[in-house]
Length: 262
Length: 355
Image (cartoon, rainbow over all chains, first blue to last red; front, side, top):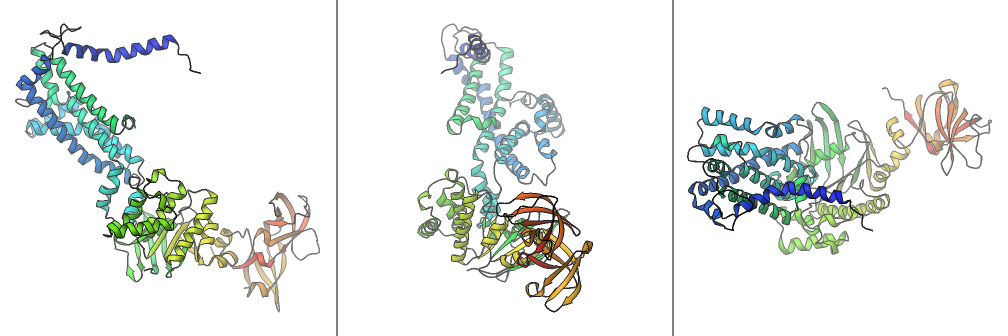
C-alpha cells in the first residue's frame, strides 16, 4: 500500500526545489534573450550571446587560460595528493594524527586570505610570473579536495593486498601502479573532476593572482560585467554550468555519483 | 623445490617495544610447523619477518641455506595466504592465480595451463572468470591458496587463514590445506590462535608467549608432556600443585603439598620425579569421589557445573582451589566433603620454575 504524502510536504518540497533551480532558470532564460541588456523573462530568442563569447578576444583567451590552469594544477595536485594520501593511509599508525588535518587546513582558511597571502608572497616577494602564480594558487586550493577524496577511497583498501602482490614477486613500485591504483581508480577520477571544477570556477584566489594580460574566465566575467550589462554574462555562466553538469553526467554514467559523497 | 627454513636468534622491535626476543626455529624440508599463541605473542611478527615485511633488529633467516635477511620481500619467493584472503579485487580468479606466474615471466599457453591445473586442484575451474567480489569466503580462501601454490614456492606461510570462515568450513578447509601441503611436500609455517586447528594440521607446534617460543614439539608431546607451567595451562592442565618428595620407596614416591596434603605417585607412569616438582592435572585428572578411604586430596566441594560428560566441581583444598571432575552417576552436593584422586593419564610432572 503506497504511503499517502501530506500535500503540505509536497508544496514545501516544490518551494525548496524552486528556490534551488529558480536562479539557474533565470540565467538560462537571460542568456537566450534577444535583447542587449539582461532581462527575464527573455524577450525573443537568440543564440548570439553565446556566439558573442567567442567573438570577444578576452573571453577566448581566458577560457583557454582557465582550462590550462585547471588541467595543470589538477595534475600537480594529483601528483602530490596521491602519494600523500597513500602515505597517510598506509602508515596511519606510525604517523602523527595531526598530519592529515594539516593537509585539509587550506579549506578552513578563508580563500580571500589565501589569495592575498599568495599575492603578497608569490607575486611581490618572488616576482613569480602570473601563470605560474595561478598554477601554484590553484594547486594549493584543490589539494585538500584531492587528498580527502583519495584518502576516502584508500580507507577501504586492504593493504594486505599490496603485500600479497609483493610476496608473489611484484616489486613495491610496480605494485603501486598495477595493484593499488586500479583499486582506487574511482577515487582518483572523482578527485580529478572535483579539483577541475573547483579550479575552473574559482574567483577568490584568482582575483588576486591574475594581472595584466593573463586572466581566468570567472575574473574576465567580473571585469566584463563592470563595463557591459549584456546577456554575455548569462551565457558565460550557462557555459560554465553546462561544463560542470557535463562532467558530472560523465561521472554519474561511468561511476555513479554516490562515491563523490563518500 | 621445497627447502628447510632456519630462523636464528631473531630479535625484533616495534619502535621501542621488543616483540621478539632471541627467537630460533628450524623447520625441516616438507614439514608444517604452526606458531600458536594469543594475540600479541609474536607469531604474526615472526611470519612477517620471514616474509620480509619487517626487518629484525638482529639475527638472520635462511631458506635452504640462502640468507633471506637482507633480501627485499618481492625476491623471497614465498607463498603467502592471508587471513582476509587479500585477493586482487580488480582481477578475475584466473588472473589472481596467474599473478605470480606473470611476475616470473611465465605467460601465454604455459601460464594458462598451470593456472587451469591449479584451479582444477582446488575445485574452482568453473569460476575462473569471476571477480573475487562474487565468491564466498571459502572460495576466496581457495583462490588465495591456489595463488600461493601455483608459483611452487619453496616455503608456504599461512597467517590465520581460516579465522574468517564459519566453524564447519574451517574444519573442511584445514583438511584440504593439509592434503595440498602434503601432496606438494612444501615446507610450511602456519600461524593460528586456535589450538585445535594447530594440533590437527601440524607436524610440530611452537607455542609462543611474549615474543618467545615456550615449547616446540609434536602435538602429542605438547598435549601429554608440556615442558613448563605456561604450556601446561595452555593445553588444559588447570591444576598446578607444587609438591616436595618426602619418601622414596622403590617404584613409588610420597610427596607433600602445601597444607600437609600427601600423595603417593607411581614412577612407572611419571618417570623420574625430582625432589621438588609441580604436579599438573587436567580437571579430568582429579577424580572426585565421596569414598573418604581413597588415596587423594581431601576437599570441600564448591560450585558444581554440568559438562555433559561429567560434573565439574570447584574444590577447596589445603593446597588451594582445584578444578576436578566427578562422574555423572553420582552428583555430589556443594559443601560436602570428598577426595580428589589423581588419574595418572591426565596428570604430568613439571619442574619447579624460578620466576
